[in-house]
Amino acid sequence: MVRVTGTLVLAGTPIGDIADAPPRLATELVNADIVAAEDTRRLRGLTRALGIHTTGRVVSYFEGNESARTPELVEALVGGARVLLVTDAGMPSVSDPGYRLVAAAVEQDIKVTAVPGPSAVLTALALSGLPVDRFCFEGFLPRKAGERLGKLREVADERRTLVYFEAPHRLDDTLAAMAEVFGAERRAAVCRELTKTYEEVKRGPLAELAAWAAEGVRGEITVVVEGAPETGPAELDAEELVRRVRVREEAGERRKEAIAAVAADAGLPKREVFDAVVAAKTAAGAGPAAKG
Image 1 (cartoon, rainbow, N blue to C red):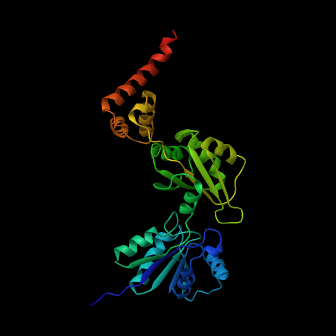
Image 2: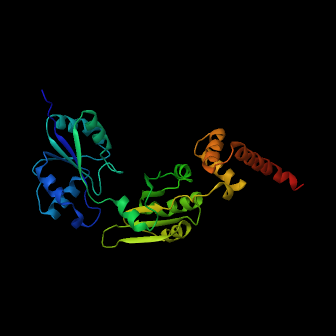
Image 3: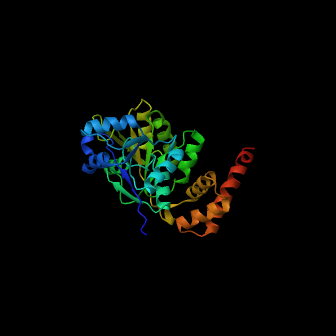
């Protein structure tokens, strides 16, 4: 006997301009048996703007109830329902609710499909003016300063373009932390209110952007940061090798592993990196004594 189940549909919604709504979105909203929405009030605004009415049951599905509501939705899917998942903006699961439901549906061998839609990550990348051939999405950084610095140090040597989401009231602190870890002159772009009336893309070195953001910034923010420069062995002096080891240690790696990783990245013998670290430690210890 063939097992018949429903379908989970992840639907991208506009990140700003309602005219960007994909045509299939309206059809899926009308035909779904269940619409799971991050914010049901936002959903009502969306359907009004599209000139449609949902016919299925509408339930909330947000960070606070995601774990508890997932089994209920999976049960409906197993029973043959077509469940449509929408978030406030963009694609579900991308720094938004959805991952748990997708994972649970896949485990039950339930079909999962998507209505492609606008993406703040890809839009910001395209507008940034930075390399887009290789990139990684890092989502939101931790709120606490120490944890934020730790996360940034983990990717200090990442050569791919980096993309982050950030809240406007934390933007200046985040950019200042990035300037500290990545370097004041590392290029970046702050993309604000994408596709909306007051869309703005501010490009420049991290230190310059941090000073700009200190004056206050509003709206939805996506930050795109240039990857670390590709430097060959001849361009890495002892000071830079030591800095890279220190960054990895502060991110939680043991010194032995950090030295091995830095040596591999630089194409150098581990002994050369080890000697640089020892020499720096010796110099630091001898500094105060030399004054006497």
